[in-house]
Length: 105
Image (cartoon, rainbow, N blue to C red; front, side, top):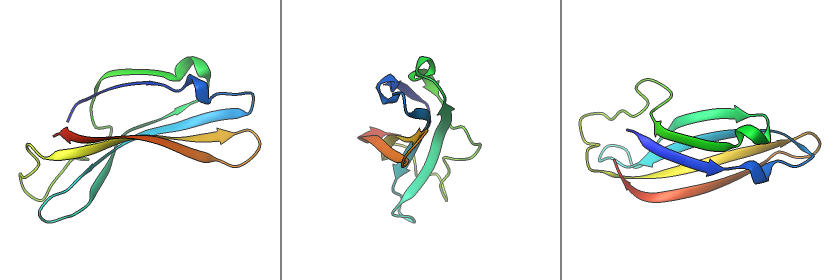
């Protein structure tokens, strides 16, 4: 699985933002398991200058993350979610996300 990811998260940084924890989830279904979810990539972004993400060939961060109990993943549809936790200097942590559905695997 290889994805292209471009995201501009610079707008999430304010005077109160300490850092962002950004991650990409891939969700898909198989005959044996109705819900399969894996973290494709994750990173901590500590400043606005690094919050413009351009990842042209994003591969799974963890070995064997995209696995199935067989060889049934080819031509399956899957959903990609880019999510980020905003960690403030003061106050409650909150999460935002953007989902992309129906991508071919």
